[in-house]
Image (cartoon, rainbow, N blue to C red):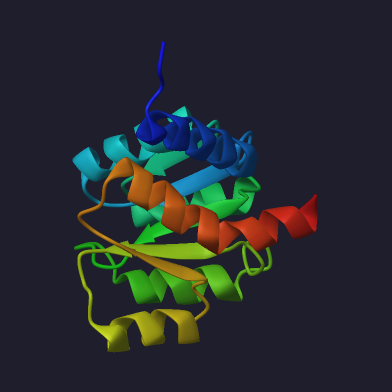
Length: 149
């Protein structure tokens, strides 16, 4: 039986993603339930333990009680601006060293720069494929997770 190059690439990619995210606790803060479900499913498949919360207030409480390896934060939410949430996370002793990755449909380079200036370690734009999402997340978090190992 012949195996295509694409299938081999997918197997290797899957193995690498699982190794980086395996057993990592990741908090997802997004007001859109559908996006929470998609990101949660993708992270579970990669071996992570995602917690999706749509309420900023509840997410901030959870981040103080539970130690997360990373936080994925929606940039625009009706309840609170993502940059305001990022500032709160970076000023809290419990989360100031936790890597925060912004998730948004905004592709303006100035938005990316502002997020990084405020403490985000990465920026993932919507829409995305699961493979692209994991690839971007891997690039952002690989050095953090390898340093902690």
